[in-house]
Structures are given as structure tokens and as C-alpha cells.
Image (tube, rainbow, N blue to C red):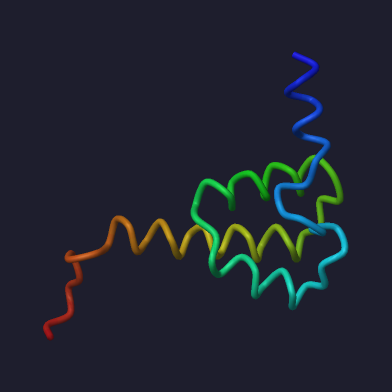
Length: 77
């Protein structure tokens, strides 16, 4: 159990807490959904910055829509 709490103390990205909003915005573009969920959980339990949470949630939503929406578009080519 203490191992899990130790993991939560470590940011999911190197230097996460030192990244500016713009740097973070660039970094999250290449992250998979799993990593974004980890970052959201970490952010919620630490700084809980609304602007950062919105950025992470929006990016996660984009990825989920791509995963579920591929091939199912309603607009003709």
C-alpha cells in the first residue's frame, strides 16, 4: 500500500511541476490516453489548477473522439 502512495507523490512527467502552461500544452500532444489520465489524477491530488485540468481533459477528449469516431463520420468525402 505504501508503494502506491509513493507513486502518486512522483509526477507522471519529468519536471512536470516546473513546466509552464505552454510547455505542458506542447508535451501533452504526444501523450497517450493512459498518461493523460495519470496526469489528471496527479494534478487533481496536488495543485488542482483548473486551467491545467481543462487542458488535460480537453486533450483526453480529443484522443477518445479519434479512437471512437474513426470511420464513423457523418460528412461525405
